[in-house]
Length: 615
Image (cartoon, rainbow, N blue to C red; front, side, top):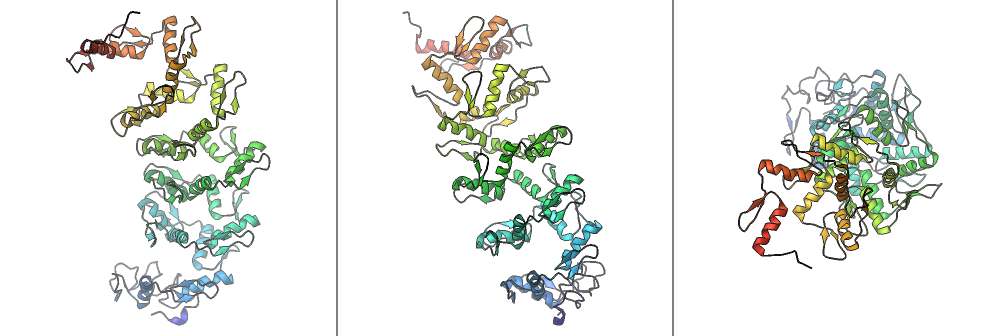
């Protein structure tokens, strides 16, 4: 056993002392991780002399003191207690280190700057900042670290190992610090309190960070510009702007990031993990900050208010963004053109136009996008998730913008007015699209055929006619389509759902636009008029077909003869003459035809129905 008289100090430890992390250790010391291990050392895997056996598991040790330390894991015994705060530990050396948090004692000093630390391991980590030495390298992605423990933590991003388990729920973590943080959720214990505002925290370092909001202290300085930060992690993120280094890589899709935290968040887009649960509804989120934002919907709390216009929001960041609408400030500058933005996320989206980078990929269908939010929205086309709920009816939506539009149905609010006609809209964006009808502006052009349109979404739909791409798949049959709206319509064939009801008859429709067209049968409204001859119709598509009678345009060509048609549907009917296809069959006599209308006529020979009466 180690000499007890040696345990009170940190340097010159006796042989065998488990806290001696420096050189000169005698063979058998458990902290000596360097070469020259002696017989009996627990890290020397070639030596089998471990006579001290645990009677509760298969652990064995070369020294009895090591076994005694191990046994405390089974017994939970923590005999050493701090008289200041009640902290308990199984090791006397840990108590000695802990006491320095009360005394402020920092015996380990850096010989290159004025840094001092309470622990030698902290000083060793600090010294690597001066030397730049990162001897530990990841074999998977080339990431390098100054500490072996940091590399071990990093490796778990590849293995997915989470060895620290919560004994009160099924939570597990890759790092003990994360587990300790989680356990505070069960106990509710927040022993650290701010003397300025009463803020309480479960961890001392969280309180330390909070105090800087009062003092304005930003001790972490960038050595390449005049930037400073209140937290080291924030400085590390900033430094990546200078180096461009992105050491954390996703093994699923190749996404890279400068921050481990961002990689952890990104991985949840593949696993679908949403560990943060709302205790008032069935909402769950991948990030705690997202859950906090959601909870404000239940409480209605909006503590942040704009002094200019009285605007209130639940988030401080939301207020900061809002204030820029008054100041016009756009602090985020593009280094490749003269574009600037009020928000960093907007600049990041813009930069993707220069790089063409689309790091976010869907594991289901291979869809790629430049924005994480774009991937999150896309994933809902596969999961069917509709997290945005209307509080006035049972409507739900996959996108927040869709819910905002829906809410206007209840309020009738259309604040955006056209200054050239009496049109009004619920959204500014919708008004801007409408204005193009007056100006004739069609800024979106197809590079294949020169087709132009006023809306970007229409161009995206048009491009599918060239590529033939059909990314939207039905999960109940083999149907696929180039448009999400077409998939939504198709899915109703499986569900039979027709939510849009006519108030004047028993008609119901899958789409609202179908109901609007149907209502014109009751009202007699025919809003679409031909400028050539005054012909009016209830449908825009009918007017488009009619206009071809004036232009003589027949864009749909048969590839087997010189036939051409004004409508694609008419061409498809014609092609059946070449193929001999007759998909419509009479169930009574087996008669087959290429056109549905012909089958309807034929059926009257069986029913005797005579629909045409002389008046």
